[in-house]
Length: 188
Image 1 (cartoon, rainbow, N blue to C red):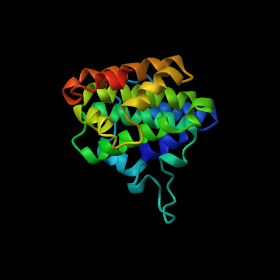
Image 2: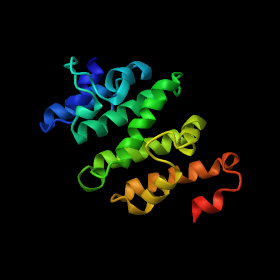
Image 3: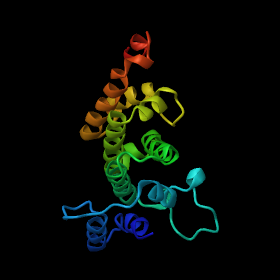
């Protein structure tokens, strides 16, 4: 629960509170930073159905500010990588779903550049590290598919996000075994 609250506070407008929360999350260069278990963190921050029930008083990912969401994505990614790519496929699917929903949102391109950059970077890393992530994108079981990523490479407002999205697109294409003859349609 502490990690969950720190993610929410990290997006606070008070710079001191935000900095302390980031340090507590291990996102600032601190020695010996420990990360929460990926599956537990996802379960706490991204409950089933992506939205908290009315009975829950604890904010969820979708209740966080844009900066809080960006920090949360970074924290979840670090936890995923620290947890040897997590063993819980359902938690990973929830994380990928959050990434693609954020990237598919039209609001992200005008006023949430930190979130755009964080989600693009996380998507790129997940697609490089996990064949499961590539298959989720290719199967169109998420909010974005291969063509959506291709289109975002050119339309994203942040050059950092465009680089990560281009890397994401390349990672999906490099796994050519699943495309079998569809390269031309995807690339053109």
